[in-house]
Image 1: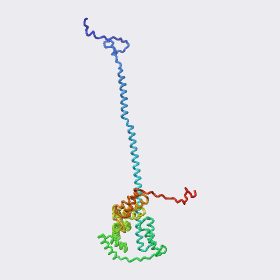
Image 2: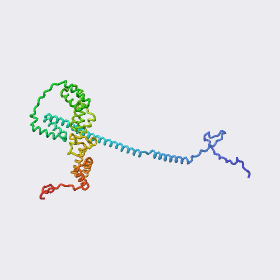
Image 3: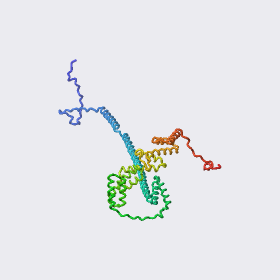
Image 4: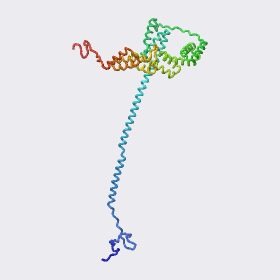
Length: 392
């Protein structure tokens, strides 16, 4: 077969007729009508792409929703924050309550301390009244002491002595007469000599003699070098007060001298500390045989700091603490707390030893190991009671 030219292999495009009413732009330049290139139809893949993109958008939205979903965590954090705030409020309220009750206890302790200082001052003044023969005034002071501080040591005994003395001398308030006092002529030369002597005693820190000299000078002429004399008087009172408590065991007298010194100027911390020790000692004595626990607490603190601090009888705080422990052990035995008694007796025995204390320890240990039957009160059958009347 003869070969065809390549041009012949090109298929001929079918001619399409164009109506005369078609637009002119479809006609070629030669006047022939050209056939426009048919537009390609949209592929269904575009719909698939749109659907796929919509699905992707939903997935992204879901992912964003998952990522941006901290609401439960925020609510959880909010709950913890609320609990924290509530806890802080409870802590603040508890702290306020503790501070309130602590302040009340401090105020009560300070009130007891002030009453004890007042009682001590009045006791010393009552002793001066007794020495001066003014028994009626001493009686009033002692009665006041018992009123403000009922357990004050020696107050009741001293009041009894005063009442006996008043009965013996027939001294009463109604028939007491006032003795006129003649004021002595002031001796300024004597005042000058006493003042010079007081200055020498101040320089040598002879406090006890300085107090005597100043008292004499004030009695002789209260206006003589008043400012300087008041300064010497304050120092003498302060230091003699310390000596009375620390050296001589005159607790009440030392407290009284501090109180008088404070009328001139505040006392320093060292003197105030000695006053607190004296108050603690006196309070322990006041509870002696009445409340052994208070006595033990007071003398334990004194024993820890000043074991050899003693009263005017020479009884040290160590000895007081030892005897108070034994007394507290006796109280435990009387209330059938045998094991508690063993503890108190043991503490006392660690500081001292005696046959009577050893016997108490042995008995308490036996009762603690094998407690005896607690005695029960018996009912007299002859005494009628609402539950079992006689004759029923």
